[in-house]
Each structure stands twice: as structure tokens, then as C-alpha cells.
Image (cartoon, rainbow, N blue to C red; front, side):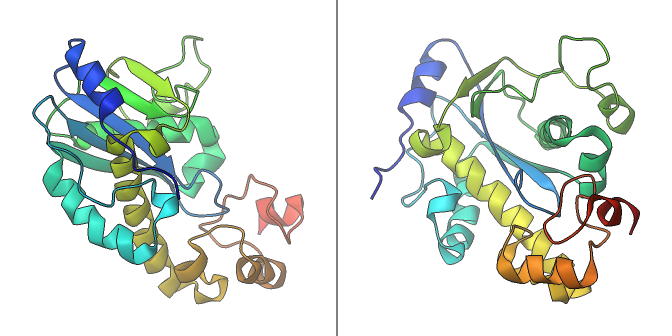
Length: 230
């Protein structure tokens, strides 16, 4: 079993002059349908140790995530989750959609972080330097100033605040997929949350993609023409 994440990295950043640190993680990037979701948890130097049991959301049962989510929200100074829809992913691509979801999460915060710790090795939150690379995003949401971003591979495994952000993002996105399941029960989203599970693929083969599928993707069980035109 992996060791519990700590606030060692976060506290180091806070000692180096950061007042409010935003820890960031995403869920839903590899799903076949539904939104991509970005969770942000804000902490400061006075923030206590993370609630017991906090881990990367992928390592927790659904029941454990649901139990921990309200504890994380009470523990953090502030928190938010932003989403980008499947149709937006189709329009601008997954990386720009992740930036869009991240900007929505930042805009929903009452406490503005002055630095961000982001899981992974790619800073998808900051506007790209190349003019017009992801220009479509500015038409969907007003561009906001993004604080300086530090990326860290496996931050969701090592950093408790990032793991906490992953729990909020996962539980929020899962709730959306369960709600969508009521509209399209054949795809079994209440169980698979839009990922590539056998029941989901079988429904795609039988029914084709729904309005909530990422139709620009090569969806298993469908042809590219069907995925774009149905």
C-alpha cells in the first residue's frame, strides 16, 4: 500500500513566500463522454494536516471519496471545481478544455491563490505564449490572470492538498455522470462514469454516441463518421 501523501511540498512553497497556495488536479481527461473536471483546494501556512484518509481519488472507493469530500471542503480555506463539457472538448481540444475548466474553478474561488501546484508535467492552466494557439477558449470564458504554476509529476500521490483536490473533482464529476445516467441509462454511466468499460462500449456499438459523448474522438464501437454525424 502506498504511503499517505503529506503537506511537505506545499509547506515548502508556503515558506518561500506564497500566502495562499492552490493545489490542482483533474479528472475525466481519459473518459469517452461527459466533462473534464478540475478541482482546486486553497491552503495557507496555518492550514492543519489534511483529513485522515486523504489519498489520490483513484486509490479510494466511491464510499471513501464521498465521506472525505465534505471533510476536505471544511478543512481547506477555499475550494472549487470547474467543468468543461464534451461539446467544448470537441470544439477546442482536451488541453484547451482543461484550461477552460481550470479557469472556471479559479473564478469560483473567494480566496485567490497567489501560486498553484499542479499535478502532472504540463502547465495547461496558463494561457499559451503562442498567439492564437487556443484562441477559441477566450470566446467561451473571459480570460483571467492565472497565478504562477508549479507542475509536479505524481503530485496527487505525494501532496495531500493535490490529493484533496482530486477527491473534490472526482466526486463532483461522478455526481454529474450519475445524473446523466438517468437520461441515458443504456450506457451505464452510473457505474462506469463515462470511461471505457465493457457495458459502455457495448452500448456504443448498439446505439452509437449520445449528445454527451466526445464525438471528435475515436470512440470504441463506432466509426469516425458515425461519431461525428450521429
